[in-house]
Image (cartoon, rainbow over all chains, first blue to last red; front, side, top):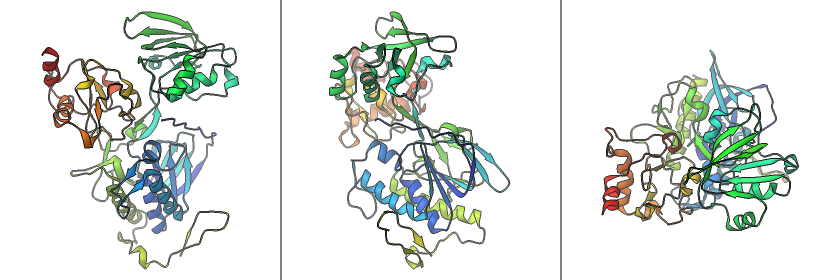
Length: 353
Length: 109
């Protein structure tokens, strides 16, 4: 899948917003637009390095046939239009940054992010779909907490003269093995399957390289006091073990989606979904949810439904923030809003009252 | 509708599908793997990975195997008192160590 998540530079400060939207997939992008229509200031947060969530990450080229008004549209095409529409709300967009803990105050909630930033918001809307993409865990690392484990690969020169063990069998593992081979003292690639799922060209290059390839094998133990010194590799068939010296361990097992820190927010969960009311409230004051991540009797997990839930959530939370407002926003066609024509140097349009 | 693993997986257990599933919804029985239909998000990442083409997209599933994938989770497996239901991730469950009666019967026959 090749998702590379960049880690933003640490920035321990607090920003303020009326609405924090967590998840910039289709539901989050449409909610962002709708929040703009309700005159709310928006911050849009996503742990991926790009907008469009799952659709952009997993199936940008697939054709989608069940979006109202589009007999057929690709994932990429839909995301492009949603982003264009969402930008009308002039959101503060923060990418490569996941949601962490939630602190509830008397008149706001504060969400800490993975980069140490704190966002104080009047309301939070969770449009996190299947959750946050995080590196798939390597079981042997559950009992090891020293240094020398590189989830994010550094510049190739950093590996000069080092003994590197890479784990995984997909594009990312094979590509890193090929890239680092000319630099490291020795590269060992450990894959628990018999076959690599990386591109054939990359696998052929790997087999012709100096990389020591151990298939049908897994990391049983990581050794070292404070930093990686060796790993024990076990053959999945014979169960025979071999101990290999190692300075660096690079787990490259792809990504997996999980609710992450949202599990600790006090939400009513049903499996990996958040239970919501008909107004998309979660039961935690000022916290709403919409899209694939919600559940209720009769829920249908489709983008078409997510768009509707996004509008329901934003209109209801607008009233929570400003009790004098009406839940019904009025019709967008009746608004005095006028799209500003794009400026020559920028493609972003904004709406003016 | 979810993706479905059919009889071609029996005895194969290659597992490449497991490594690419973004929601970790492919569980290991004794001689074959099964997709948890409620956890599957139908992304299709697994489809291209299977070396024996045992995975079928929702539009092309054999109803017998669609039902058998569902039954692996919805009904108590042999030797168990409760169904697996939705464990929320195969890596947390580990190999289940038993197959559905349909698969067990095929292996014996």
